[in-house]
Length: 207
Image 1: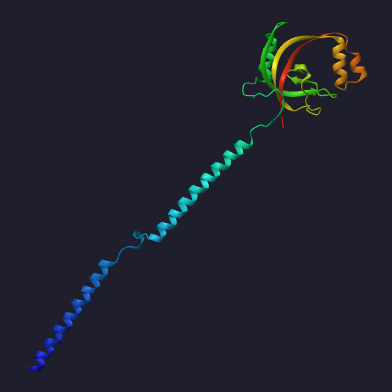
Image 2: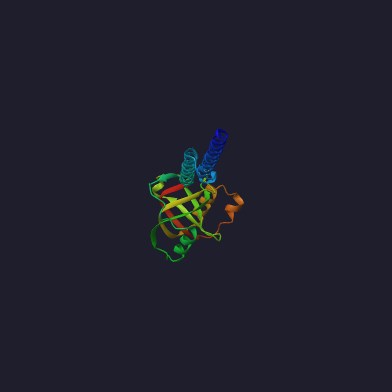
């Protein structure tokens, strides 16, 4: 009888242990969560730092572009009266303006072009390109200022008064001599010339 009781108790104990084991396995299964759904907080911090760093770099790049744009702005050396070149005509527009003038007309205007030639003695006059072999002969008001002798081929802006002028033979020869022309070239000047004249009260020459 005692053996039967012991056997029954043993079976009951084994059964109890087995149930407990199954319960543990079930609980462990319930606590497992797929690792790919878990985002550690330190990973979020790293990603946030990466995003912030990228934003900072983008702002720096934009600032660099702005600086480059500012530095690329044209700088001029100023001679004579001060003025800004915001309203200056192009050489094509200026030629058209000259062609609309009659002898005796005068118009206040600004235009920008390339210097073709400068007086090689004092820098007291210069010629400006007007396209198609046309040019504007520029004198300076009251000889109040001069431009550098080596300003040939420089981009420039002039401000003053445009008009048509008749230059005598003697004046043409004088200007040719100042411009460094040879005696043979000067001797070929035999007729007066109607020119696109300009009296400048201010000149800007690109640095």
